[in-house]
Length: 321
Image (cartoon, rainbow, N blue to C red; front, side, top):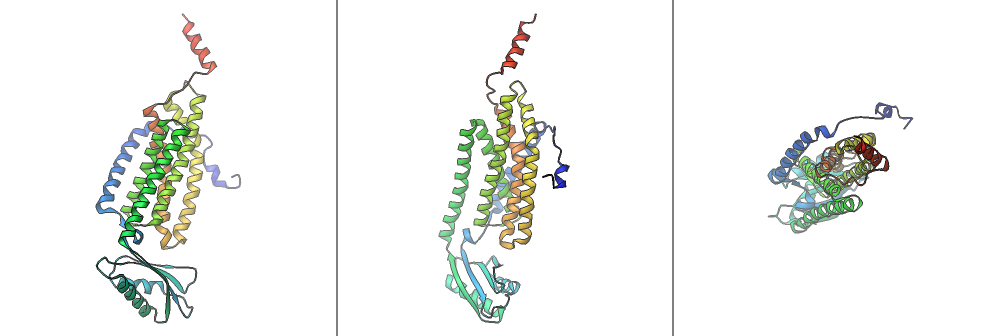
């Protein structure tokens, strides 16, 4: 860290009053979560091919020359079959085409129409491989399994925090996780991102990052609760958040920088994944400070027995006339 001059811009010690603004932040979070939940039903998620049904095929030019991805995308889009995605792969002569298969049309007929449009757009012989069709029944099962995976992940996180700390810590962590997941879904709906298996992976990653950040804050809070047994709880929470702030900022900024590069250079397939993950990391840092920790203040914690010094001070004060 000494070799990176930007680290010197971070103050070594802060004394910010986070709890002071917890009420306002809580109202703000509740409003955003309600809006995000409503948006998931109307207009709803923009389901990708994985969850709505469709087909995927690999296309390769037989002469080995570069494939015009724009021409291929335009030719398939003109068929009017719904969302179309064309992604370059390792070789410039190859591409991956993803498109929907309307429920009222025969799958094999749609695949043949797409192949004919690609042949006309490319103007040279092409070969097709790896053609796979995902039906609506399978896609529905995938969607259910994806939501089940999110629910199981949140439940296991709650059990982990509960056994490691106390029930109120587990409740605060789960509320923070739900906050992050709901707002991430709201972002996906707001920008009409395609909700695919990649997005499920992004949301699961957000859950893991948010939980990691929450555990760091809660671990320092538990340590300070043992150390400062007579300090007011709101002051202990502020102290713990300030002590972990620099670590949180450095970790978050580093992750966001990597994801920004992935969004710019990763192509269309990873753009939505990267944006959702960047947002989740930022909102996960926010929830660790203004969602998880304030719940501890509302619920309260067992402070345990006083230290010997604190007992002596208390007995001395009581014996005075």
